[in-house]
Length: 257
Image (cartoon, rainbow, N blue to C red; front, side, top):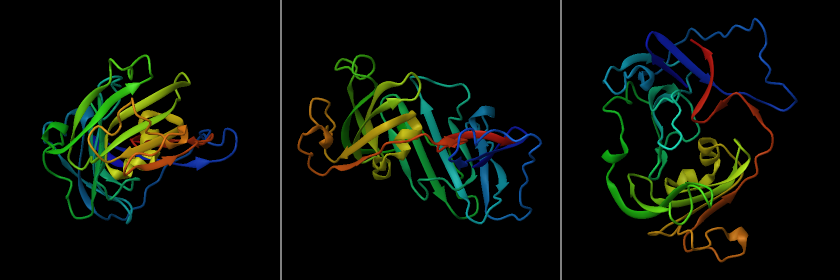
């Protein structure tokens, strides 16, 4: 993904390799970009408040496979000052064409892609501006004693295309502790990889179901635990091995400014 912030163009990219320390930086490496220009998109970022102030600027995509992106990444529990809450630009991300997203009472992730000139313009997307879709799901983030205890688990009203109740369990890469996520999701989030990247989970299991409050923590949403699956579940389990990556789905390593 590429986007503008201030006078800089930030480019995020991803590479995967399979041997020890294979992602070690190479001294003197120069990043080059093709001279060809393709789709024209609008670009802005929260780091300079250009998205919030409506100060979109034009950005020419550098690859024929790139689309215009509109992305929201917001965590109220563990806010990172480096996160771009809103960003627009060019890219080719998993989840396109979308829209794809997740929300609960603490977090909102959303990605929208389009492929016509400056199609990602308009007011910044806020969760409260998406219409209610009539679904209610349980919401929490944390473990069974802190964050997802019975006292801290609450209901949330689902909005927009987030039409599934989701429950994900896994191991958080920071601290190697068990972690639970519940909330509302688009069907694409039920495939698991978006959840793992957004919440930094390994050895994760994701289940989705259709129907009000169907991710009730008092019920057994996980078929692998021996309980009967709920009506209409979309279920997928993954185990992530040791992959050395330089960028995540929702963020990445700064390669060029």
